[in-house]
Amino acid sequence: MTEQKGYIDRTETFDDFLEADGLLEETETIALKQVIADQLRAAMQQEGLTKTAMAERMNSSRQQLDRLLDPNNPSVTLLTLRRAATAVGRNLRIELV
Image 1: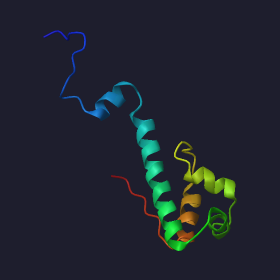
Image 2 (image 1 turned 120 degrees about the vertical axis):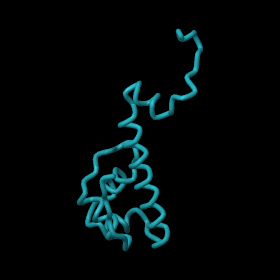
Image 3 (image 1 turned 180 degrees about the vertical axis):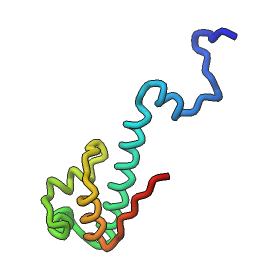
């Protein structure tokens, strides 16, 4: 069967689409970073922490915290993640699945 113009393959997943366009890895990375940023923001709110106070607890700068909370900036170290988790009384858990 030849594909017709405008044909939509209903068996194709969104992941398949992203992978075909070479965007899957980047999209998953941004999504993961967004989840981490959302969890940190929620924990900061629970603790009543401002960004300045959070940065102080992390022994870091406000700019570094802003980079950590920015989902479009995938550069984050495990040390920074661990400091952020500790600053809000949480543990960092990373696993390969």
